[in-house]
Amino acid sequence: MTNNELTEKDIISVPDTEEERNKIGWKRIDEMTDLPLSERDFLSQVIDLAKLFRWKIHHTRPAWSNKGWRTPIQGDTGFPDLVLVRSPKCIIAELKSEKGKLSPNQEQWLRELSECPGICVCVWKPSQFDEIVDILK
Image 1 (tube, rainbow, N blue to C red):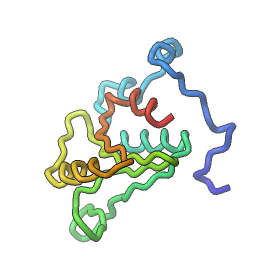
Image 2 (cartoon, rainbow, N blue to C red):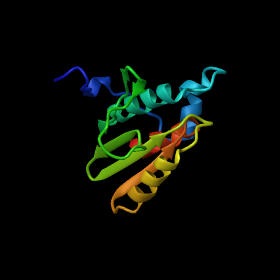
Image 3 (spheres, rainbow, N blue to C red):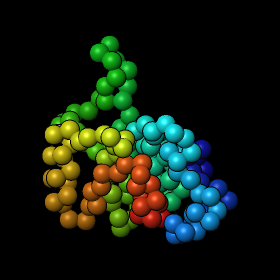
């Protein structure tokens, strides 16, 4: 077992309904502070959730270069943040902060990917966390 793999004892039970989550005081990170959740922190939260529910995860991280932060790719820019696969499902998700906007290149990628059969294409914001839990569990 590698360090990123979860065992059965690592998995906690996520309440099924919003009513159950409210009953035990379940809170999203952005509900515990007055500060808005950054896109980076939100991404980390979604990746942790996907690991919890045993999804295969791909995210391309930016790296520091002599021109600042860059995401090294070969191809068209604007590809979504996450590819999540748990057979038979494939989710391609772009994550944004509450006020974040899609770039034209991101919109084009999402439009074209949404026309591919069998792929669920999503744009997620922190306020949708409960929905994301329901989708990933």
